[in-house]
Image 1: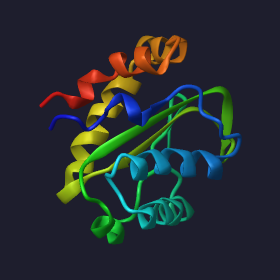
Image 2: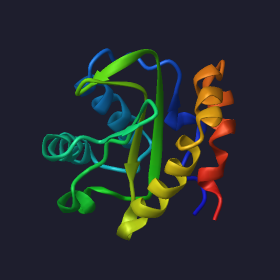
Image 3: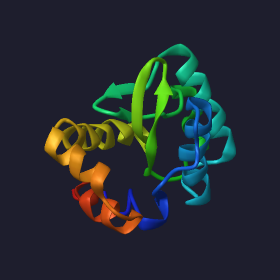
Image 4: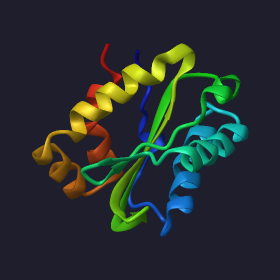
Length: 145
């Protein structure tokens, strides 16, 4: 599972100031990467309406619904870090990580992201990364098989 995350899919800082803008921003990076069609971004909003994708530790992982799998052309991640926390249903989010997985691949990707974000020292390093390049380098483990 290589090239799930590329430097072009990392944005520091993000420009969104609301949850909806953050979902759109993370989704657009997936569209721009050729991983999903624009319909997938609509499915990300649909998922969010049914269940919050806030995960804790400053992380939200917006992703599409099961019905949106046809909108995915390849497995990919997008990572957007915000200098100011985004209000995500009353929780503070510093990272919106968009996920698209082909044939159930999102579960493996989610597992890798969860491992990184479960370590508070690791999260602090991600918050302190001075550039998209540094953030990307800190997240390279998600590309490993």
